[in-house]
Image 1 (cartoon, rainbow, N blue to C red):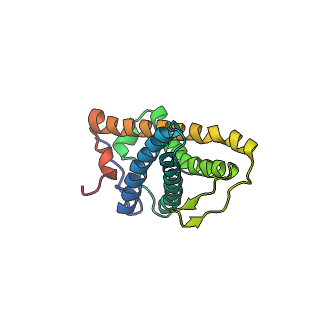
Image 2 (image 1 turned 90 degrees about the vertical axis):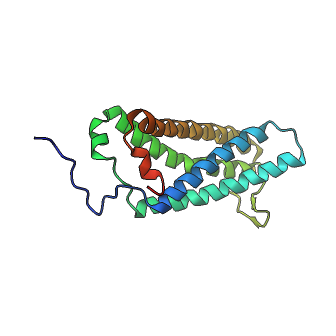
Image 3 (image 1 turned 90 degrees about the horizontal axis):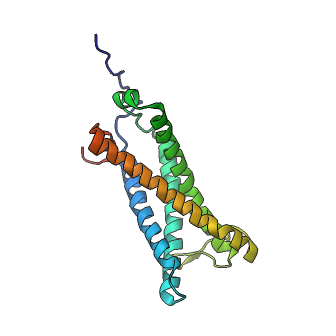
Length: 191
């Protein structure tokens, strides 16, 4: 007698919602772009171009923070699909731990990176004027010492986020190319 997969109820979706897919891909692509701009602008000499990129970087960071809030709220309200039974059953326990741990850390860093950047900008005395129109409140008081203490943490957390994103991409590609188990299709529209 062969074992069959447990029945899927209406409360357990098989695919992510279209909104979840949209937020996933928009945030993923935006994070890649924002990380690239951050690397590029950090080594530029002081110039109008550097100031422009720093402002754009801050605006994009605030936008990604807002989208991350929306994404987390959507995820809390709309239950994500569980791993398919066949994949869950064949996955070693360390991979299950890595799967869940990576997702939790990614969500934590979606918030930590921009909030630390905002704190650094505030402490350094450079307020964020979103789109050049609305000045956001300072996250922390102006303090050169605090700014120097915070500055490296924005970089550390950004690199940690990039590393986890690469791990996430590698795992998705492994499922698509090596395992050929269709796991990636749950996050692709139109299938």
